Structures are given as C-alpha cells and as structure tokens.
Amino acid sequence: MGLIYATLTLRNPRRSELASMELTALADTGALHLVLPAHIAMQMQIQEKEQREVVLADGSVHKVPYAGPVEVSFKNRTAFVGALIMGDQPLLGAIPMEDLDLVLSPATRSVEVNPFSPNIPLSIVK
Image: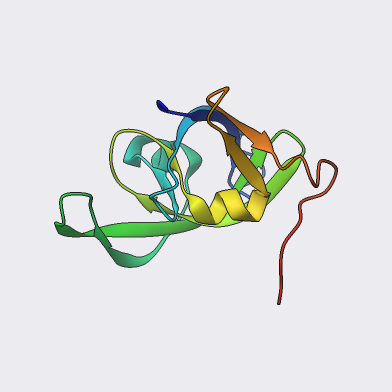
C-alpha cells in the first residue's frame, strides 16, 4: 500500500498573533494522537499540559509531553486536538482523523474528506 501523507495547516488558538504553519504529516492509523516534533511545538508555542506514557511499535514505553490545544485544518475541516511531542516527523493519528472526518484512499495514497459527508464533518454520537 505504501505511506500516505496529508498536508495540514496548524495554528495555536491561544496565540492568534502567530502565523499558522503548513506541514506534511504521515497519516498513521496505528497511532491515536497528533504527534509533533519538539521544534514544531516550539515554533507554535503550544503549552505542555502533562506527561503521557506512550508505547512504541517495539513495545518500549516512554514519557513524553502532551501539549495543546492545536487547531488542525485539512481542506474544509478544522479540529482542536492535543499533541504528543516526540519524534522527528509529524504524524496524523486516528483521533484527529476521526474528528476531521477524513478517510484514507489506498488506491491514490491520499487522505481525503469523507465522500459521504463532503460539506460538513460527520460524527457519530451514540
């Protein structure tokens, strides 16, 4: 299938004077959260809220900062999420993808707005 990337626009909603940031994130359905490298979190001036334990693919457990809020935009969608601060590459995990109502297209190796709800994000709340 290959790797799938999404172009996102990030903004710190608590610091409206800061410019938004466009970046490319790996769409990772095996990850839950938005993951940002420390240098991006510093540029965005997002505030650490607490430490979280994370389990990596190799089974190792690490404590990492959890920060936010982060405003994430993709095409006509926007969500407010927290971010784990770690690694060297932005990851778009399952929670923000669900919040934005995005789907992965393996055929085109792309992230897309849910075609069944193209104009407004759909959430299931039952």
